[in-house]
Amino acid sequence: MQYTEKCNPIRILIASMKKNESKKIINILSSQNDFRVTCIEKDEAGVIIKTWQSNPDVLILDIQPSQFNSERLAPIIHRKSPSTAIAMLCNNREENHTGRAIRAGVSGILLKDEDMDKLIPAIQIIVHGGYYISASIVIDTFKTDSYSNKDPKRITEQKHLILTQLEHNIITGLARGYSDKEIAKRLNYSEGTIKNSIVAIKRRTKLNNRIHIVVYALSNGIINMEDAVWEELNNIPNRV
Image (cartoon, rainbow, N blue to C red; front, top):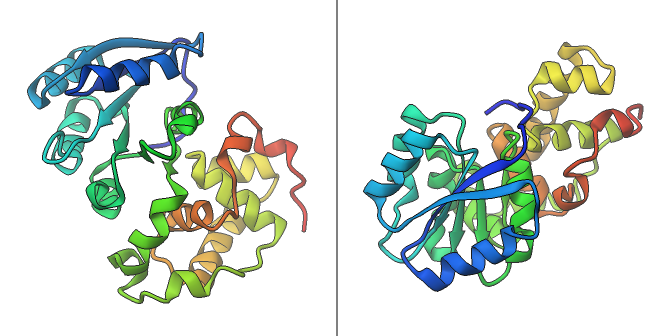
């Protein structure tokens, strides 16, 4: 998903089989005047039909064991509602299947017992085409996932990676869903320079693509999206 401006309010559909869980989510979202919960669905068929009908900006999947399979739902949702960003709330690390969920089209993954205070900034990021993944789950998942080419040491060995200011700004732009052209314009560099810098980052981190870079940066504290949600990249110093 590329970065796009969203008009207020941000329309949110919640999929949860438990009434008390959906109430918790609504209570959190109610603090934002520009968020509007349009519907709550309790089964997969209802989620698919309602999403296709209303095309919400965000779909929140409250994942329970053996319920709301995000890997199956996300491609179906995006077939007729490609602009709907999907956020997944998980009970534990084993349930989320992070890598497969992202490949299926999920943009946000949060742990319910750790990350509910981050739900609002996560929505603000993914609704504009970015990604938000709980820092506490990505390292364990991506150390052994195919994202790291089955080298369990690769991610942890790169924790002390040193980035230039330009590279840091580029990764922030990738996390917010900007295209190479948009990043180049905001940072006052050529698009070729941005592309070459991304290639260099992938080479040094030994990661496969841009999503992997974003996940790595979030998990290692290289970027902090809570602090950068509404900060424009062209306000960040862009010269090394």
